[in-house]
Amino acid sequence: MESDSRVDILPLRLNDYEKIVFFTGAGMSEESGIPTYRGKGGIWKQYNYKNYACQSAFEQNPEDVLDFHETRRRMAISCQPHSGHKVISRIERVHPTVSVITQNIDGMHQRSGSKNVIELHGSLWRVRCTCNGSREDFGETYKHRKCPDCGKWLRPDIIWFEDELNSHVYTRSTNIISDSDLFISIGTSAVVYPAAGLPLSAKMHGARCIEINIDYTEGSALYHDNFIGKAGEILPQLFPDAL
Ligand code: OAD
Image 1 (tube, rainbow, N blue to C red):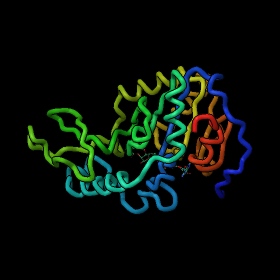
Image 2 (tube, rainbow, N blue to C red):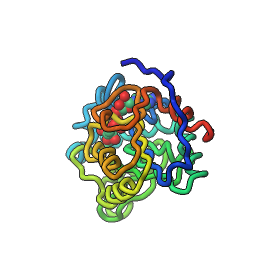
Image 3 (spheres, rainbow, N blue to C red):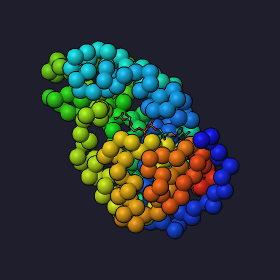
């Protein structure tokens, strides 16, 4: 289906909602120039995740895995947040309870000014080691590839295929979602669990659920409203006062 951003959109009134969650996936960053994972031009079409995004690949060939993530870092650093990211960060400034729960690892929400961001799948900008836990590491290349303390390879602090989500991060997310009254999902294919189960949880707890995507997804049927179009075009129409 073609993207059609000319849908009729009745703006939402922020005051009608107490606790708002923006739940985002790779489609949120697409207009910034960062490719999504699936579909045309998707990262997993170009790279086999088994060689670059799982613990066994890292154990067998850490340098290739780190090279791959440096390529992704260079790409992300060269991109900028777009108007959709700005709508979200501005709403956070004027509304008391707004959370961004993102599957994205690119840090684009934070660069746009969002403060209350939960990264379900980790971050491109952190590394971790069994001896020291996780640490910030921002830049096109890694400051160190091996831990200065124990000498082991530093692992990108990202949830890869076959990894479990961080249980604290996941529990915090489900708590926030079960308390929300407006849940807006943006740019996710809704195929990767457990993240893909969160919209249903929002609905079961009574939130109004809205999906923004350039196409219908596996999860579309559960939403109260589906807006077919780009995040950077639909969000400013939904929240015209935020820009
Ligand atoms: P996907 O690549 O699976 O899906 C991207 C979604 O964004 C698709 O449904 C597109 O239709 C939609 N989309 C594309 N451009 C858009 C735009 N400009 N505006 C709105 N929607 C748009 O990405 P995710 O659902 O985020 O995991 O993928 C989930 C996880 O799978 C990722 O977090 C990643 C990946 O493997 C890890 O890295 C652990």
